[in-house]
Amino acid sequence: MDDRQKNYYKWFKKCITALIAAVAGSFALFWVIDPYFHFHKPFGFISYRLYDERYINDGISRHFDYDMIITGTSMAQNFKTSEADRLFGVRAVKETFSGADYNELSENLERALKYNGNLKYVIWTMDFNSLMRDKDYKAYEGYPTYLYDDNPFNDVSYVFNKSIWYHGVMTNLYMTLADKPSTTFDEYSSWEKETGYEHIMETYDRWEEKADMAPGLNDDDRIMVEQNVRQNFIELVNKHPDTTFYIFYTPYSIVWWDFMNQEGMMRMQFDAELIATELFLECPNVKLFNFYDKYDIITNLDNYRDKEHYGPHINSKILEWIAAGDGLVTRDNYLERLKAEEDYYLGYDYESIFRQYK
Image (cartoon, rainbow, N blue to C red; front, side):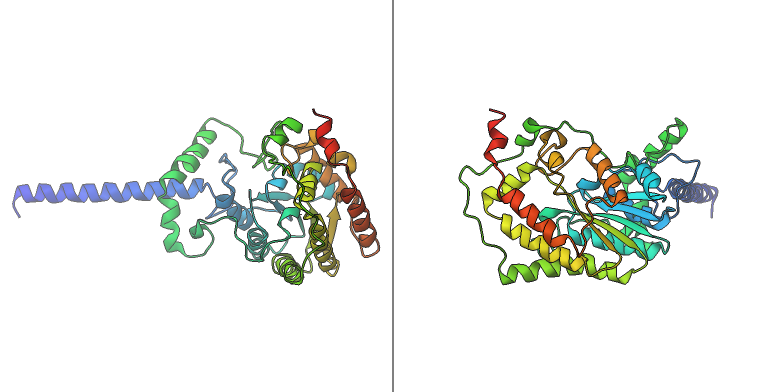
């Protein structure tokens, strides 16, 4: 080998060595920052931005210290874990999934209960408008499956992901160097939006002609509702008898009830609620809550940004109600409560909602 070839060889070795060092250094930095907590629990000297629920929640389940999970759809995003900690004497985390179906929430809790044998309590939204759906209904596709398994080889999709480097690693590194605090679970996924009639009506396309009221669920619909609740709630609850599940029907506004009235589906909804309620009452470790008798809340449109979503102050009230046992559904009261609910919402003057704003 002549001198020229030797120089090329040395240059090649230096390039390879530098490349390996760069890759190793990048991986080391990524492992330390670990923006989605895939490899380890958060370090105290790193500031973390909690965001992108479907990427980060499984890491929270795996590696955080907690004995309560608050989970659900966007109806749960404004819960404050600091309030739950104070009211229940726990250490809570929040894992919400905007637009989630029952199936997605159940699968996430299944993993969390597998990771954390000390999980004592779950606060879980049961979105009232999802009762009449197929048990396998999927509202979201495209999960980052490499974050949900134990296969180290597909972690390259995580470590060498340009978007995760930019939005995760570099953001957390900047926050750390700038001495900015981590996102709290009170802030994580929370939102502040204007509420009231005008904002609700921006997204409410009301039927001009009211449909005939359906008499209730048919046999196939009843089977569908029961299978939905059994698969996505009851089976999981029964597998974990030492965990207490606080499940509540999400209290929508009176405009949502107008929607159900205009579509003629209200009696179907009551039938579905009865099926779900009786299934939950068979589970000793479930505490089921229904707040549809909070008429002052439901009919005050200043509490809502659309026909379903209530503001953060209602999330705070819900935690207080649950902690106090206010709204608890029992074997002794569920039929009476449902009858009162039916009488109120079937007999409500829905046109009065719109007259007062004309």
